[in-house]
Each structure stands twice: as structure tokens, then as C-alpha cells.
Amino acid sequence: TRLCAKYVPLSNGLSEGDVERCLLSVGDANAFLEYNRAPVERAHQLLHQHFHPKAAQAPELSLAITIGRYGARLSHSHSTQFAYVDQSLRLWNEIMADFYRLWTLAEEDLLDGNGYRLRDTGQGLNRVKDAPRVGHAMHRVLGKVQGSVKGNWVGSSVVHLGDTDVPNALVFIDKYTQVPRMLRPVVDTVDKIPELCQDPWVAKWVAKEYGSQEALIKTILVDFFRHAFDGSGADNYYDAGSCIDGRLTSAWNWCSKLDKKSYSVVFHLAGHNGFDGDFSR
Figure 1 (cartoon, rainbow, N blue to C red):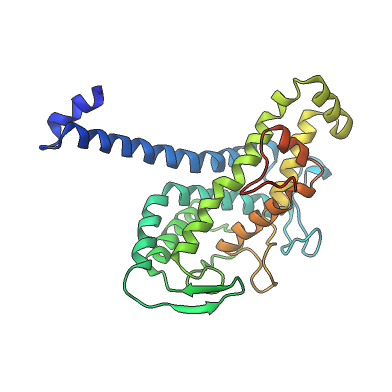
Figure 2: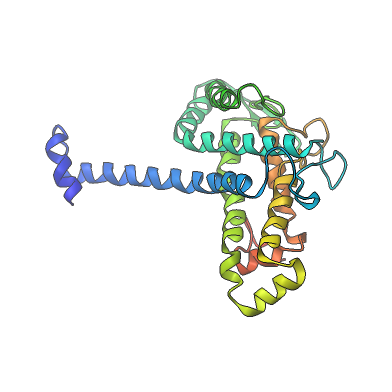
């Protein structure tokens, strides 16, 4: 009410109701951006908090991955994998920050009057359509992140749009709306472990299975930072790897296998029953 009273006289004739709707819209936008960016930023903090960028502090804390081992389709040393994860999270954070503009551009690409091709992309029939506006904006975002790492970019810079991997701008937007859905359960569970261990039975189980709360946290994070960023998840080796789109595919592939992890019960205890469904079945 006080904000409306403040801005109505400055609104060039807008009614109090119009000003209130504008203020609520701004609040919704800020809440949306906060929801999307917060888990990405927290994941980035956890990476730097628990791992050294140059060398593993212990063999079990190494982020190194080898192609063909545990499903990985990339081979990285610890330092290279640290940089790869760090850069991927930076990129996702920038995309989340620019999400409204990308969404608007996606709609413009979809509705620009140009035709599409109906093709079987390997994921059923899809409308394959170029997305030049989104593509240009994505390359600007990517260029900003690559500039921040001063030429030490790890992996491919290919942005798939209008092809069998990302058929159109709608699929592009949908893929990136999954980023907070994938990361939030991970960061929330890790952050809740100390609280969960206030229960003596949970604390006893954690001590027996992992040795300590810190060991459990590192077990989850080592696995996540290795294999949610290992190039896996595509149907074939041609589509797999370190491209911009492939980083999302790897993360989603890790999420799809969470119910098979020895620590999946910790996610249940923290209140997460799945990503877009119940992984307990």
C-alpha cells in the first residue's frame, strides 16, 4: 500500500490498481530469478568449499573421470574436471539471470512466421525450426563466461539449436527450466545433513556407513561433480560429450539414477521424493 501510494503520483496517470499489478509483477520476477539462481550459486559455493581447484586433497576426493568408466564419456584430470564443473555452473547462472530475455526471444523465434520441418529426432516427431535470436543471445552469454575464465575454457562451445538435439527454441527453454529442479534437491539435501544428524538414529547410521557427516557430504558431492558432468546421457557417442547442451544431458542422466545410489535414503530423509516424479518406485 505504501509503495502504491509512493508511485501512483509518479505514474503518469496509471491507476492505483495498475501500479499495484506492476509492483506485484516485479516481485514475481525477482522471486522467479531468485528461485532459479539460488541453487546454481549454492552448488558453485559447495564446489569451491569442498574441493581444491588444482589437486585432490585425498584420493577419494578426486574429481577425475575416465571415458568408459562408470558411464563417463569424457576423460578429465581433477583440475580439468573442477574447471569444467565450475564453468558449467557459471554458465547456468548467467543463463538463469538472463532467462526472461531468452524466453522472450524464444517466443519470437517460434512465432516469426518461418516454417518448420517435422522430423523424427530420435525422441519422436518434433518441429525442427531455427532459433537465430536465441542462438545469438546464447553466444553472447557464453562469450561473457568464456571471457571471465580468460581463455581457459574446458570442453566444446557448440550450442545446439534447430537440430536433432534441440529441435526448436521451446525445447531449449524447457531444458534450462530443469536446471534448478536438478540442483535444488542436491544442495538442499547436503545442507540439511547436519540437521538430520541431530536425530540419534540417523547420526548412528551415518557414522556406521560413512564415518562422519562430512564424509557423507563429500561422498554425495564427489559423485555429483564427477558424474553429473561426465558427458553421459545421450543415445550415442556422437551426441554425447561436453557441448553446451550436453552438460544438461549429463546432469539429468545423473538425476535419473539417483535411486540406485547408496545415499539415496538421505534425499528421502531431507524431504525429496524425486525430480519430476517419485524415484522410490
